[in-house]
Length: 250
Image (cartoon, rainbow, N blue to C red; front, top):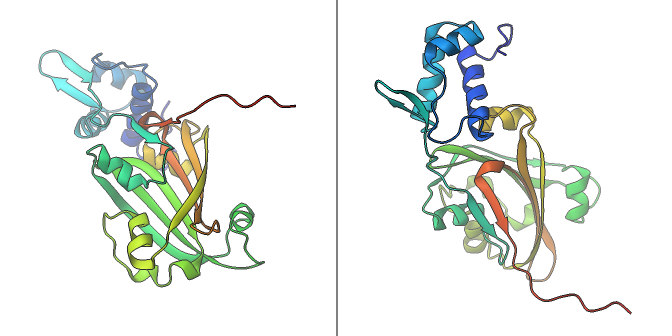
């Protein structure tokens, strides 16, 4: 139910409830949602609040209004993204291959002493700093991913002064810093969304997100970057190619 004492506006709380029901397929594609009057009575809120929540979901193409018939769950504009694990491709490159326009609505670049997990992965000295790049990413203007790159600072000096726009960060590594990629290790897991993630993706708290950690090495086998990303779980799918059977252990 809605919480009137919460600082989050009632229409936004209602919007998140309906978006959650759509994503969980409680309201299926092509199915009508309850009428505005029914929603108003169910949540004991004003008609204006109901209309604003529905209007925003319509504007974001989750709902479609059919005059004289009602409001229905629309087809998603973005199909689930397939990330193949055959090579080291960037998030931006993957979306562009699918014809989806990548975007960044916010970006932060700072020098920090990273969490222990990052420091161990990058083989840092005690209190050694890294460059942290955090971005809130969109695909076709929809919230898609919160991505944080931790990079050895001497690999990317003055990167905060470079405006790479919509270009892949990996392209910046290659073109501006002559970094040659070697191998990468990627860990994929589902976990409950944090408060920040639930607000950005407009999902209910603790709704699952796809959390990905990538450790990337240069051509000499030295780790130079760790990427931590949280992805909207219903928009992402990973595909791995497998070959052969392991040899018998003796």
